[in-house]
Image (cartoon, rainbow, N blue to C red; front, top):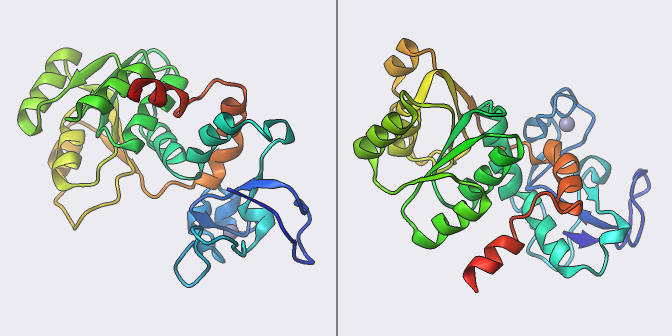
Length: 260
Ligand SMILES: [Zn+2]
């Protein structure tokens, strides 16, 4: 997040002084994939900090500024708490939302979230936002699980692997319609596939750690779909930003309350 100091001659939608938000990838906003809301596959795009400027610097050149950056509403200016609540949209909140969307979370249904890291916690928030009635989180960190409950998790599973699978299958009588895989290890993916209800879907957003085996026979026999990948945060930011500004989506205030 930063303030625009200067714009290039072809920039149309931003001006000096605007406060803007940048997702973790930049994109031109005009190619086939940007048009499909898959800006992470932009034909001209890339990731900050590779061959381009990194976001930790005091000043950064934003490529394709009109496509990459999102202006933050002027009314938020000066509200430090709200600005801090907006910041996670650049990465973890959009990624949690991508897991939710990829797992096909539906109103009144059950979502299981594998992992209690920042993305998993944002997965809980966004699954609740889309109306999941029951949200089961699988994790092992007491403080994070307490935050998950604040965010809307209805059930907590602290065991692992086969034990965790058994518990979720029992409590859901056959598995969760939507499973959000927010870790990226072979065992977390395995757990996610095993706790998905027949006909359900796994939305995976954990960066894969090594090339693990995928339980294709379980997916085949129970018609379980696998969607997801790197989150096209740019596609989601405008929609999520509205909710954060309206006070309807909040990953910051609640967690601060929990830690204090
Ligand atoms: Zn593009």
